[in-house]
Length: 327
Image (cartoon, rainbow, N blue to C red; front, side, top):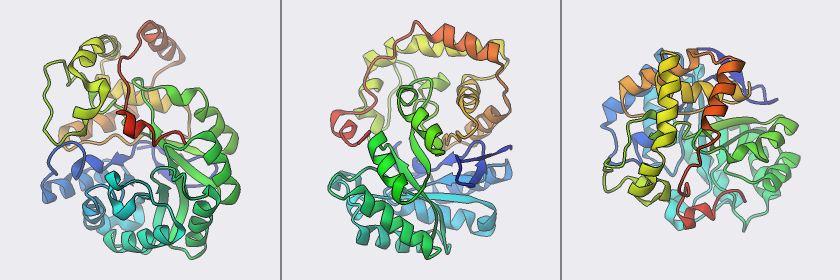
């Protein structure tokens, strides 16, 4: 797989990474451990060198999983993890105090079976802690060699600028796809200005853009999509038009909808590296194939034209989670 550099950081990653959250958290029961390890190692064998986790995924179990799976090839991969929730539990709210950041780093190093974290993200902006203190804490970890690069997740423009002035931000991780294009308004121009890479999560719209989800789909009781307005039965029905258009474009290119959606993202900027996640080996192979699909300028214009009349229905987060983003 081709490699990309995240902004001006010098951090080289595979064009597509692997978002590992769903193996342990968020989308129903955790994947059986050995099956999850096999999937992670299969991703590496197929060219993926960029793996994303967080202390909050589990909590803690996802980092432990990656530590075991990637230990044999640790020096050939880039591992990103995150700090920012109290005791690593999302429902307890943010905690980015410098002492907490240091404690998370030390614990993550042990769970990941490594001596350094390649990319250390603030999971969500903590409005109770000055951004300069957060960036300063990570800067010190970088000075100590425990962290290589600083990242932010779902941060707003002002927070990104403040952090970047203290410690250069290598990458911003936020949702971006044909299903959610809000970053195009303010965030992408800012990242280009500052030389920051972009790591889109949910590049397949939490599965919706694959065409595998329809109005009659039922999710496991522990699947967080049950609480997402965009995934209500009515909105899934209303949004089928987007999937239909994407499917037609994919058929014309002799590809799948997932591959077109990923290829579209890769075509937006050379410093974008999406991290689709999956628990299934056949979906992993399908997603990785998206890195080989080349969309011409004519293809991109055709996609833009085809989708221009479609408005996606439903908020992407319930209100209490939406309040944590863009700050």
